[in-house]
Length: 132
Image (cartoon, rainbow, N blue to C red; front, side, top):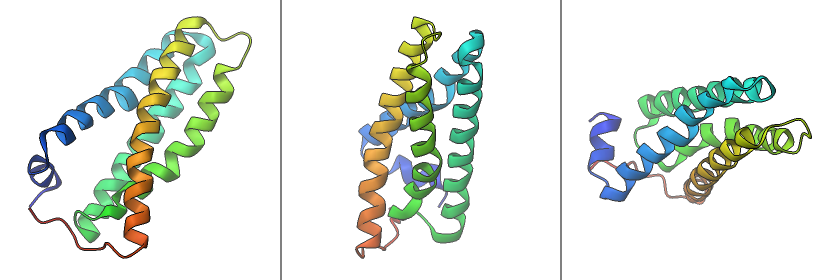
């Protein structure tokens, strides 16, 4: 089965959450390019999200739908979160980019909570792939 087919077998809230995540971690950061002060933050966030997504897809192709799939998100998003927090504290950062970064951070933070939980469970021995 494909990853999308396996996700479709999950509870409905998982699909809803993935759409929220797609908006908050991929689409919303694109709006940061409209302000000079936040342009780099927007581009770096989108690049990190794409790399995280590619990493998840690659791991899925090698290991199946396992709890370790959150690891690429942890690797790329923790540094991005720290960077965004630093950018939000800049005195020259306009209010709207700060608000947008807050929503992006909230979205990524929630995802990281799931990812850290799943990766920890994998490390502790829950290694059976979900097959539907």
